[in-house]
Length: 116
Image (cartoon, rainbow, N blue to C red; front, side, top):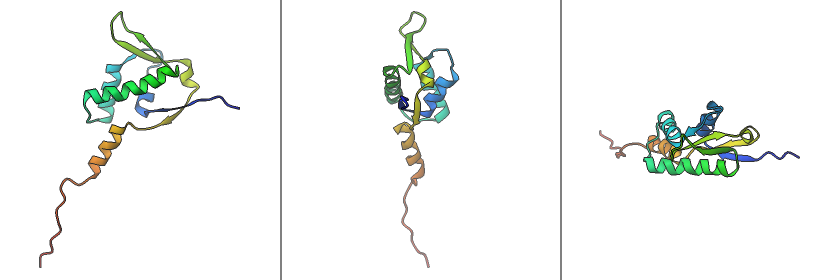
């Protein structure tokens, strides 16, 4: 019987940790990459909440580890060996799905008038 745990993660965050093999990534770097890659239209505070929730779940399950960077108050995150052993289920952030819905809605609804 397999003992592989399934964790839900945002695909962009998964890619960030895959690309930074052995180095630490700060919250600021993660947020900057998400905004630039996904072109998110979300406040900085809301983005911070969403990212912290995701990272907290990964730290709690020991999939990533956190550490203070350069004797400062900044935290860095990097993947652990367990990262490779976990099966990930990918899910978009709620703010990403809102953007798609907004773009799909018409700007202004105008009634159709038949002119004869």
